[in-house]
Image (tube, rainbow, N blue to C red; front, side, top):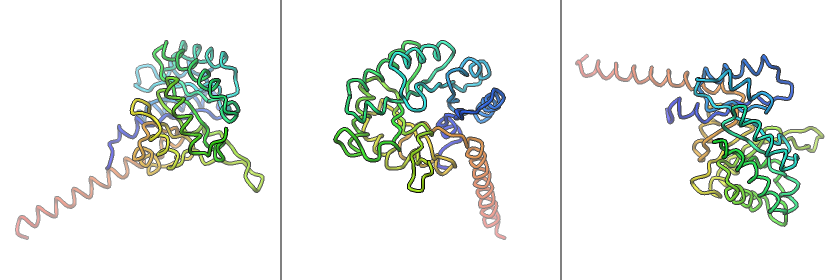
Length: 264
């Protein structure tokens, strides 16, 4: 296999964010995250204390979303939400930018918004992932095309102290021509663009649309270090299947070689 099980498992932020998620589903999700030894669970703020208790000693971190999913809370609300999440045991914070302000070109506001969360999180020893919601940015904004706009957000995020830049929330639904709502989430183009737009000290997280092992591997290939996922079990079970098949194939080849060497 190209990457080890641990390398890929520790890329996954197991997402437990569905609006209707019950306490039992949250508990089951935390147990699954511990079983597969992923990097973290990504959960709603009210659930941080419960998840921190469930995952204590497991090696799996607790991450909380802030201003989720649309980023429209006031800056002080985001800061205080971050403070409470960190007090309850969050080691990572996934915050959504104020998209309206970004699209208006109010870059000072956008940076202050990010910085308030980053400074609060860092004060508690937590790290921050800044969510852009790229599905809303396909036409660019503030006089820039889409790629230039995303590059600007990357640069502002780094200046504000972000530890990761993140493609999406997984809930950035856009109205389609047929009237339905859907989203793409992380794309190869955006991951490569964002990786190239920040320095080595800032990491990149993919979210939305990565549903199988090959997708997870592609994120890694493109320089992403984290990936939000709900299909954790399917991904990592597939890894074990491929690993077993590879080892079996190697065993067959070795056995055949030994037969040849023995003069049969």
